[in-house]
Image 1 (cartoon, rainbow over the protein chains, first blue to last red):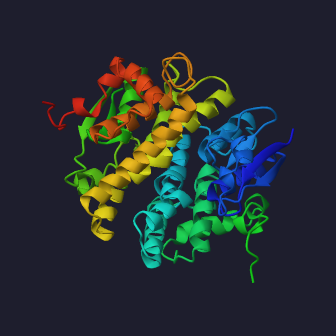
Image 2: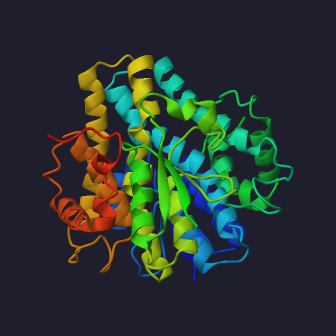
Length: 216
Length: 216
């Protein structure tokens, strides 16, 4: 059965779900919801997801699955092979905690609704808004670097990608799209560069999606 | 074996973990880390959790478990009874998504490090800072209310508390401590009031912890 993913090229949370679907070989088609132009508020999309948010994952005739981290756990439970979490509870907790540093500590500070508040309510100028985004983007990478600096392998934990790699890759993609200087985080960059050599990651990248700006 | 929980009375993330430990009947002792006075940065606590964050849950001789949502999943895997997630993957995804609305969409915008940025870097005055906190607190409750308004039972999903109730109760406790007007969210209030009648929730409440201000 083909799943319907509602997403947008610039949505890093959609990027996470796309990677997981690719890694697990799940058949899906993506429907573009242009959150830059406010399409998520259209009645046609609200009929699919009343919360007006991407990503939303729809299985035939079922209510939409929302919240990218909950979707990743769902995919792990329904499509267990290949696993995106280790086997032991302690190792799973470690991977989940690593995933949540960018996905829960940082990403919620960088999303469109917060950017809108900074510009519309706080009336911050462009440099102040960019400083906010850079600060929280790099704070998460600094925390991750502390965890990952001593990791010997190609991924965050173990010999295959986990949800920690997915969330790190999405976060790093955002930082790079914003042209923030991430050179102080060599372990993060090394792991992300390794991930991005995998088709499942590379094909899911924001700039590979319809609607993304063409790279010169 | 007694677990060691490092937390603070005002930490809503610690409140979440405390509820789960109580519901599952896990033996633990709590160690206070006064994040208002910066104790999380003391070398003695950094030796326990280098990330200088609460909550951290330590099992004898093991590295600390961090990130409250990852800790909840860990407790669910290691102490499955009573369950804090439903049985079916779709129902689990729904409960996790509900939990993440307050815990991941809103809470990261309300934590001390963000409050410090608002006052120290953006130099916002007190009314602007309070407006920020109120806006994001109530935005999450509005989203939850949309999901919960038609729920017939006493909890967010099903006949027993789940991680969705835990995260809602913690979020509401924060909103009430800040004296925000939550009257527009009757379903959220009804569910939280029901939860708070349970000892596992009531005994975990911030104001019941050592160091909390005495209620007049």
